[in-house]
Length: 274
Image 1 (cartoon, rainbow, N blue to C red):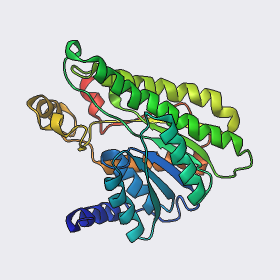
Image 2: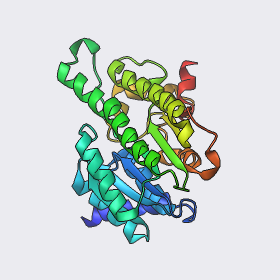
Image 3: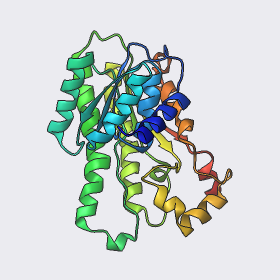
Image 4: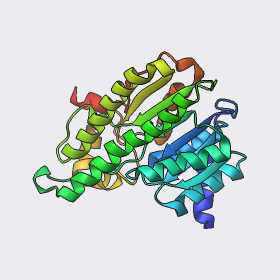
């Protein structure tokens, strides 16, 4: 790990640090943890006392995240995982269980984007978006739930969180496919919440606004992006740290009656079109 990357991650970890007892004893698997929202949340979960299983395809970047968590006294492991591959997901849960025991909470965060005119979208891009954003999210939640259902005596809270988007609730030009996959994720959270309530598994979706991540940076820097940002109430991309309290709330023991929700956390961005 380079000094530059290491120092940056350590700074991120310190910035997101919360009370180390908040998630003490919890084991949480998060996908898409190598960058952006996933990396930020992995650091925050590690700072909150959880055992964090950091999953993504880019194993080298995962190692940097885990080293930052470990250096600050947290518990984490890196696990290469492709959410489009069911066997890869099963292997991730197997590795997590072998290291920390049953995974009690899952954050299905892995996602990819496609921006541009819908008339020019290739079948390959369509398959990739559906495969990662919708199919991958479902397979991740399904595997986690199967194992939780088999562990009837587990005393920890049982939580599944999907990271969706405000674009799952309203359309935006040039994002028809991405928005459709996120709308599917929101309905998936609602349907699974209904089906798995009898197992004390809560399932919710968080719908963030645009944030400064690699999935949105190019658009935010474009002329169209800058114009859009100028119309938002706070005229900024939402800080990543603004997600922390919502994630911690949905993971908490006291949120057991909160399920089947799509929680909008967007810095007021959607108000611009109200």
